[in-house]
Length: 205
Image (cartoon, rainbow, N blue to C red; front, side):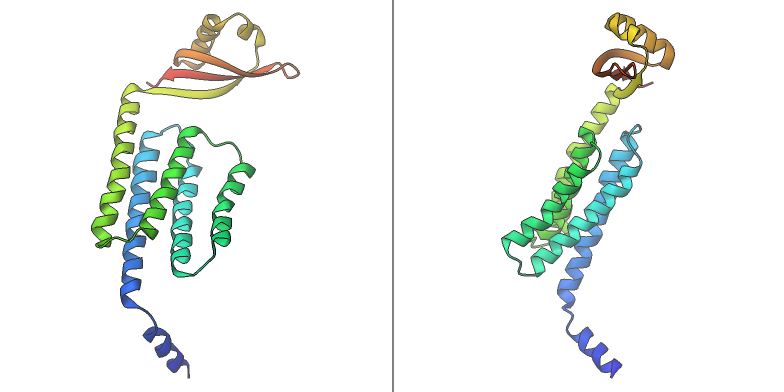
């Protein structure tokens, strides 16, 4: 009886659709590796390593969800509700830097393209579309890496240096950090704790 059900299950599998799904899934994994590991992590040395895990699994999850949406006849409300989950996760978690948020959007966009767009030739079509996304990211990362312009948010607990002006604050921070600081932006000042949130702009060594 078990062999009968197994044979019936195997016979019901559409080999062409399964082959196309596996090709799309494999190409999506390759694209995510290039975007997340070879571009984001290679050039974003001061990024947050935990984002590698989040970006990769987010791409896999979006690909699977889009595949299900393409296979199952869902109404518009259910489809929008599924993608609204990303918005809920975004507002319930900590603030994500602009650059990381851009990579998250790229991961979602690439995964949706790889899953939903109907290519006459899946391999060449996915390679073309993904290349058109990856090349601009690669060029921009090389340009930004050449400029070596970085920024870092720090908490500074000597408000007297903050009040004495930007030039004095930059000179003090240069001595403390050893960084080639070019600009300092003052954010929130906590008078109770005598602390200030500073955004330091500097050139990477």
